[in-house]
Every structure is written in structure tokens, then in C-alpha cells.
Image 1 (cartoon, rainbow, N blue to C red):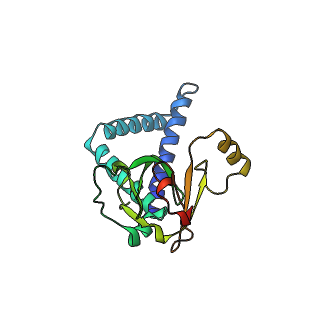
Image 2 (image 1 turned 180 degrees about the vertical axis):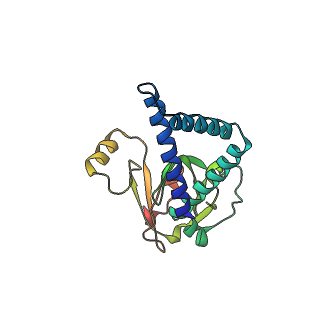
Image 3 (image 1 turned 45 degrees about the horizontal axis):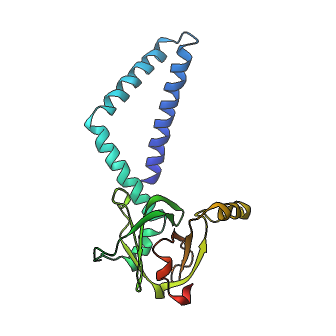
Length: 201
């Protein structure tokens, strides 16, 4: 399925690239009839697609596919096998929305976190939640927590992180799990830092 998607995407990119080249060339040289016919047909079909119900259906299907793929590739779905949890929190226990990493998936302002004396609660904002079940990670399942001043993914040069640490006022927590040692979890420290047990600080 993934290979079919790549092939279709490549065909679409090639067709669109040819269209753009022909449109630009039309202003400089005289195009043959088959090239002009291609431009007219492509433009007509593309406009018809954008104004049809097929575009809405395609957009929704594409969105669900992408969010599901992110959930799988980031490791979120693997975490859900053990840590899936249906939240039943009081109104006073509010999630804080921020940025972070789950695996290699960077969540820019779409990751929601909450912590109490039992553990860490994670969920995605509604439009990005498909395939990402709500998680509750007890503190006793966490091996270590370290604090940083950036959400740079592992591999960034140290001097860049050093510069960011000087100018940044926001801190982030790198969380390592006992049963998933390779899983990357980096979350905004706001509202969470004070709830971390002393043995993990």
C-alpha cells in the first residue's frame, strides 16, 4: 500500500512538473499542438477536481492516512499497546498544549500533556489524533528524565543547543522508558516538572 502511494505521488508530481514547464515555455516559444492540448486538459481536470466533492473526500482520506502513518512510525501505536488509557480527569486537571517529540515525529503545538502523582498523561489535539490513542505512563515505568532548553532531535550539534539554552526560557523533558529504551519522548516541562518524583529528577 505504501509503495502504491509512492508511485501515485511520483506520477502526480511528474504530471504537475510537466504542466508547469509547458506553461512557462508557452511564454517563450511556440508549443506543438499536443503540448497545448496537455496544458488545457490538465488545467481543466485539475480545476474540476478542486471544485468537486472528490477533493473533499480525497483530502479527508489523505489526512487520516497521514496521521495514522505518523502514529505508527513515531512509535505511538506501540506505546498504546501497554499505555493506552481512557482519561477520566476532573475539570481542574487541565492538559497543557505544547511542542515535543514522540519518536521522530515533531509535534508543533499539537501535543497535550498532564501529570499528577501517579504519572504522565499524553494525547494529541483532535485533528491530529487519528491513530494516536490517549496514553498514561506511570512514573514507575519511566527510567529517567533529563531537562533541556530545546526540542531539537538527537544529532543536532551541541553548539546549537548551547546557543538555544542561553536565549530560551522554555525547558523540555527527555523521558526514557524502562520497557521501550529506544523510544524518544520529549515534552514541554510546563505543568509537569513539579510533579516528577524525586527519584527521577
